[in-house]
Length: 256
Image 1 (cartoon, rainbow, N blue to C red):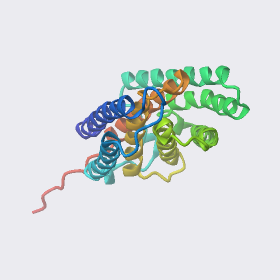
Image 2: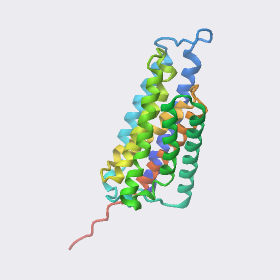
Image 3: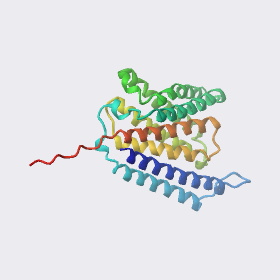
């Protein structure tokens, strides 16, 4: 199923490039250089929203053509690492996420944000070891919950800090990226609890990549960029692994 894995992840990567370009143009165009206020109902904003909706619809449609009914039932088989190079990419993505979390831990003043950053540091090794975690049984399942807790807490803290901000587009893409990463790690964690839904998992992982990369064009902190970039790339790699491990149906034998 390697062909399908490349098809889906490359489609998601192209969509991510489009989202990055449009969001960068939006940031350049809608904010007044003197007041810093956004232009209401700007065409580029409408275009970005429409494109994001169409991208999500296209990914969902494409996920239905990935033969998700051929997914292995056992998490060890579903998340198995196909080769060493893929593991190194996961480790690099996890290291980037860990460095970003450490940066947030030392730079943020909020106690809740420091707690979220600490969870982020602890969650990064889970991303790096995700293909091996199913071998650890219940302990591995418990570890897989750490990223879910991290993104839950980060989402709550981030929303609390920006709830009074009337300029939605100054933080909207970042909060969307955090939410999509939360959805992705939740779907990955479900594999460890034998509640996997492969189609939803690969869909969520690619949405996490697209929104995380689009956020890089915002004026977010260096730490947040590293965290979202690392997790976005990491979840995309897990998406590739999941599809690659689909087992093609055995050919039917002719009976005479």
